[in-house]
Image 1 (cartoon, rainbow, N blue to C red):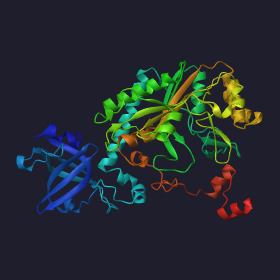
Image 2 (cartoon, one colour):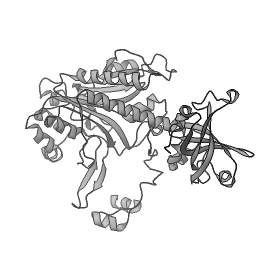
Image 3 (cartoon, one colour):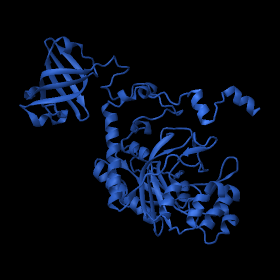
Image 4 (cartoon, rainbow, N blue to C red):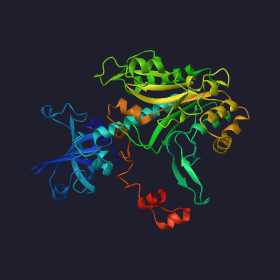
Length: 466
């Protein structure tokens, strides 16, 4: 007999069916036991006679039920449930797996459980209706974005996770090489250089739903590893080509996947950076008309960012990244008018959050080299760290640009969640730990020897610094 899902029970009144799932609740009424059986689609009530095996079933045990679907009497129907008008009268109940006593109650969707407990037992936390809905919405969002871009003649290309460490802002996660002892890969902060190389390769329109890694302090809307929609386009006239694509794509996403939401502006505002700071006090302004409305979405773009800024230590850095094209008419402006130069950069903002950033890229090797020099890199550093990209640009590179909306942050806002951990299956804690897998963890001395590295404890590290 083929298994059906719980929400299909309405279509099989009077028929015998097979259901599989978890025991969400169990109510003992003497000789009769009522079980709410949950699967990925929902819940249906199962009615069975009491016996020794049924009585021992604990909440969240996994069972298989074969029974007949019956319509409930009108006065017993539950109008709040999609399957509230039927129940399954069990012929047999097969216990597939007995659950231990639970560390917290799963049937309650309230966030009344300590987050560390939720993350330690994330596989239980994900059984909650709210969490399952979040993951389903995330999957539908990614599916829509993929289909949209494929229809627009973009090609999805996977870029490497093991790459080269280059200065791009945040700290890299480093991976030691066994075959080349003393050398390291870096996990990508973004596929920035690879996607530009794909433009050199003539792909013209690329996208990727990609995992990115940054070793930086986490917060509610940031994780050590995160997912972004990476987009790059060749032969575009200006930044408006990218903005129009994003505006159309996300407007249609809301219409199809989140129809209960309403977008504040039919045409999304383009706000210069200086105006955003002076008028709203932020480069990611919240433009909602009613900030108490959880279904209002105020999309906007912030444009005309400064090309360079100074850190707290006085060091010069790129506001976006060094591959962003500066708005200059002559290369000499980079050294003579450094702090007044604007960049061909744009941010994608939603309800007070930056949810994506992009730019028109520099495709002139001389300008890119000059930008690196302004940022303090020596010619030797530039050749060592970026020589592969500059060499590629010598063989014919089209003008190009792109953007990378953050999937986690966007889904967080669309699901009205307070932080991105609620829309990620297995997120890290605020200090970067994976409590489900107990990572990071120590490794054996044999593994370290094979990699040609050793671990220094905190005391030894302090002594070496002295």
